[in-house]
Amino acid sequence: MVRRRSLAFVGVAALVSLAAVGGSAQAASGSLTVTTLGRHGAKVATTVTVVAMPSGHTYSVQSGKRLSLPAGRYIAMTDIWEHGSDDLGTDTFGALDLKVSGNRSVTLDARKGKAVKVSLDTPADVTGPPKISAQICAGAVGDMPSPYSASGWNYQGALYAIPNSSRLLQFGYLAQWTGNDSYVAVKNTTGVPAAPGGSYKRAGLATMRFSVRSGTQMARENDTALKAAPKTDDCTSTLRADVRDDSAPYSSTVHVTPGTWQPSDDLIAGNGEDVGGGSPAVRALKAGQSFTQSFGRAVWSPMHYLPVIWRKSVGFSPDALIGDPDVGLYGADPTKETVVLTKAGTTVKRQTLTNWGTGDAEFSAGIRSAGWYDLTVDAHRYRPGITFPAGMLSSRVTLDWHFKADPAKSMVAPVFMTRFLPVGLNSRNQAAANSTTTVDVSAGRGSQGDARFTTVSAKSVRVWSSADGGKTWKTAAVKHSGSTWQAAVHNPASGAVALRSEVTDAAGDRSVETVYRAYAVG
Image (tube, rainbow, N blue to C red; front, side, top):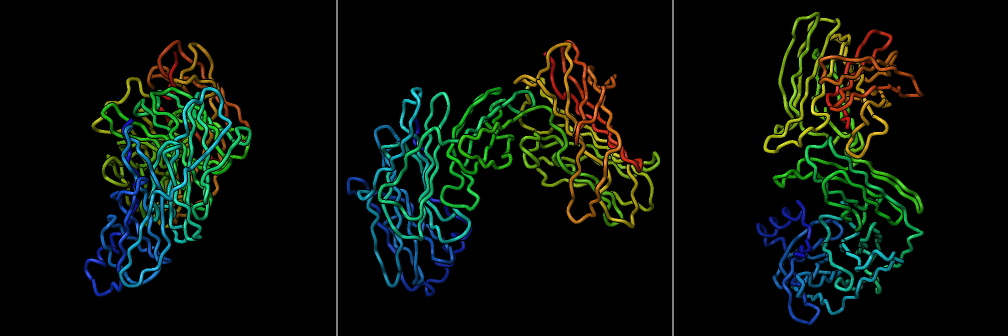
């Protein structure tokens, strides 16, 4: 295993502060030199993060080097990492709460470090020590933990922390045991305790299950993880437990200490490039509670943005048009789309856009008179430089909105986006040959900035399916169930199924949405 070096995080404030030090030596009325010693007493070169209290101005300096500073109170922190025969070596976290006036020299001595000991009644399939990610933070300033922290990781028996009772410090760790399942414990303390660590029981843990399906995503390699996400940021915020890095489909189970957790998924293309993924909603889990986080379930479709009538124009943000509903708006894939606005069959504006490599794409077309308008969108996934997996699902989406617009009135158009959720698909998003699939259908609307947003109710919902790529369509039986509709779709013997919906309201506004290759049959 190759040792991943620990990091001292330094943010924008550090750059500003360092520039000020270099450009105005007269402003500094003192200096600080921090020497760092290893576990055998020899000097070890480290990067020391120095944080001014309580302003949070941050500096970075090499150990043994003199840092000019204004007089005041500071936190100096680092991870003293030393080489070892197995490339992992040892990590010792240390920090000092000190005052600087004149020229001051201090020492952080790893020999004073206490082993971080974390125990769990592990099952027989867990045979190794826990991997511990840890960080020490200046806990009396905002924006925890970065840039006010030093972090790193190692295995139990090779990770230490120097005790310090200062209430301006925090120490956080995430311990992970790995067997058939993973077990994760996270803890934050004020100050660095004399005996850092903790003891945990499996009976007191919650469970997060990861269900990663294949077929819908731009790449097959999925790197899933779970991050600590406390409601109030502390020194455990963003500490990460690696769940699994593998080709979809797969399932993994992680048992965690009760609290708030952020699941995530990164997609890695064949060329090694990170091409997608995202972070779904944060999950608050209680002891004994279980939750399944899905990634890559069919069907991927438009996520949020609707047409807006604003300043005598019809505008539309063609973003998040093909996205994973289990991840949310900010996990959508890049697309290339053609957007057309027409009135009474006459084209007002036609434009081809992409949100790949160009920032936020925007469609806007001026209108001069009130009346019925049609806005159509034809979007394809678009990511130059990579090869999409063969047979990728949800590769194309079209929208056809018919609504009344008045250039004198600003509002979100009274139209809908549809979400389809087929029930009973396998881990490859396939239905059985010649079967019938129940598809849950919901019609949603999202507010758009400052534009007036009105409540609109769907009067009717119709659904069609196609087994030949949209050449022919068959009507699906639809029944209303609470706030959703259920469509019964008859599947072919093989191939893929396209889905189309039509949602209308009492005023005659109409929303037609089509997802090609919505799910597979096999």
